[in-house]
Amino acid sequence: MIQQFLEWLNTIGIPGLFIVMFLEGSSLPFPGLIVVLSYGYVLSPGYIQTIFLAGGMAISYSISSLIPYFIGQKLEKHFPMRFKKGLKKGTAFFKRYGIWSIALSRPFGIGNYISYVAGMSKVNILKYLTLTFVGIYPWSYVMILLGDYLKGNYDAFKSYTSSFGIYGYGIAIIAIITFFTLYKIKQRKRDLTELREGGRGN
Image 1 (cartoon, rainbow, N blue to C red):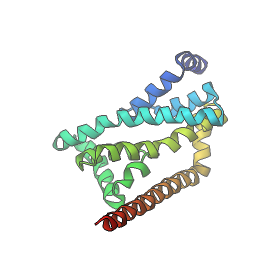
Image 2 (image 1 turned 90 degrees about the horizontal axis):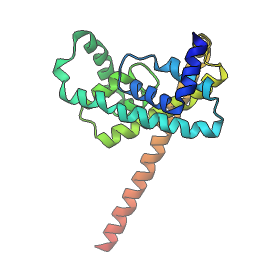
Image 3 (image 1 turned 90 degrees about the vertical axis):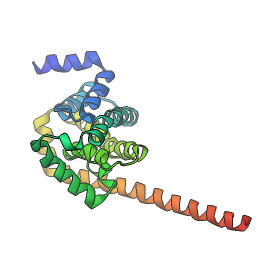
Image 4 (image 1 turned 135 degrees about the horizontal axis):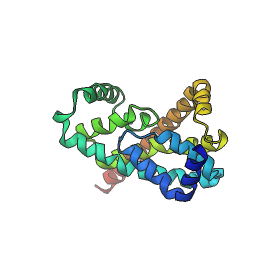
């Protein structure tokens, strides 16, 4: 059965992986992690190829994450009670970390709820897409390589993450924070330069 599943994934190829990420980003109840790990084993890409592969995965996920984003904008008052519990957690996380939570939450289950909360909070759509891409890209890259390394074995993955997963997520979060801090510093310097040049012009 498992061998047939792997052969099926191999037949579909990379487009199937992008479809999986699309379903995952749409917040549908789908075992995306298991399939992504299996794809890592089936495709067995190198480090360089995985850079581009993860980029396609992140784009597919980001585009589909607009579905819960727009649902959050339009149907805020009509969510089921069971769903609202997850939304409360997502809202608390969003209030604590602001729009950064969109990127920081992507490797975790709460990321799906953040998509709805971002829509409810009317976050700028370009910022939302950018932060979603930045948050899911490291996850995509690591999961493909990890799937290859663990030969698609989900039980081995659970054992691995229980020992090293926290450190891996910590590194990913630090990388995201560092990236945006440098970006903000660069943007602030650019704004100051423009103000000075504008002042000189006057």
